[in-house]
Image (cartoon, rainbow, N blue to C red):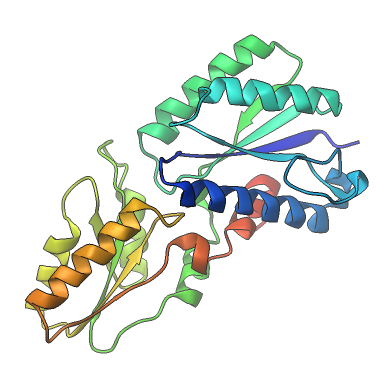
Length: 258
């Protein structure tokens, strides 16, 4: 008898692309869990048509920009878990940095849901996705390295003290530098710094889960910079969901695989 169900929590967006990518990720995680741990099998979710005997209970939710607040989404999913005789709901924050959403907002929403649910289901928050120990090796295997040139890892960024430390550490380990959407240094500032150091080829890696407005803005910015610096070759890589095995990162998270 399975004892856990899994809720993948993303930020939420008005752009439809992240929601579609999130639903696809939920399906892949469900399939991967079924293949890796058949004992987790339970009733089918709305995202699949596989037999009920082979499907773990996996669903997705968003912190913002949804008709219902996150705590209500959690409660709704918990009711499904109760029907399936599941006593634990594992909440997986699909965030890459330990910013305000991870450290404050999600725990607050989970606390509201837990109070409403009582002791029927226990809610556990897993580590945020960016804390995954496989992340560095996984990225190193898929990211190109220009010669001569530089790489910029573009993150949304966090204003929370220490919130950007993981991306700075990751960039250093990958031989890159970091730029941020919401705080300094910006992409334009880091591109200028790279060019001053003599870089003739610059790769920008969006450290962002799903394609959305930020990836569009990166492409627009690089187009403008290419006109300003025609002698520099710019390349923008896809978002993480298009190049990295996110479902394996989630599996490592929820199953404590190393």
